[in-house]
Length: 296
Image (cartoon, rainbow, N blue to C red; front, side):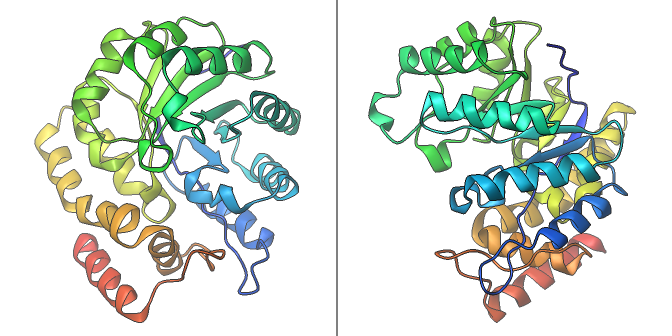
């Protein structure tokens, strides 16, 4: 199976919900069409920022279908099909492949986090990769899973012909450097947070899957454009300028804040799904100020 390394920015796409909790599929499709106008390399559908933990399989498959149908030509489509069960991961991934997905981003299994050591993770990802119809990338996000893939496991997995890359969302720059050092040269290491974007570019990383890309995609791409044009000081200045926005929508204000920022910037954010809570008026006012400062 062929895989083209990602060069540029992918949003882990938000899932707009209606006030009654139903998925707003029309709003989701309109987001894809709007994102097509921006500096993006592709899309990640049903990732962490998609509130995937709250979606049933039918909803997931419909979101994948809508992404594949509405994405601009040439944009790579990744799907977050990782489950704690190997069998269910393979099953969902192959259903996504039939709908047109290019590759699967597979979350580290984590329910029995104390038992998720190198041997467990190598076994899990190997069996998934051996039985899926599209290439696999590893998704490392300890914030949610409390599992951090060890470097020795990554070194082994990066040699598998159908495990082609990883998204590391921990924002730990020394660990990112370690992953680059131990991984097979053919393996693509990407960062999963704008917080690590400039250091990642300095290390030769060319791809990012960033929550902030849902609401403010172009500045992320422009940091890369400036850096690759040799304008490193300008790239760093732009990175610093947008750093507070990223901290707000990926940390302090969470997915509700990210959706509010998307609404403010011409996308359909919509409501969050219970048990998450929508942004308060105080949160919105604070976010307005942060966004206004970055956009000056």
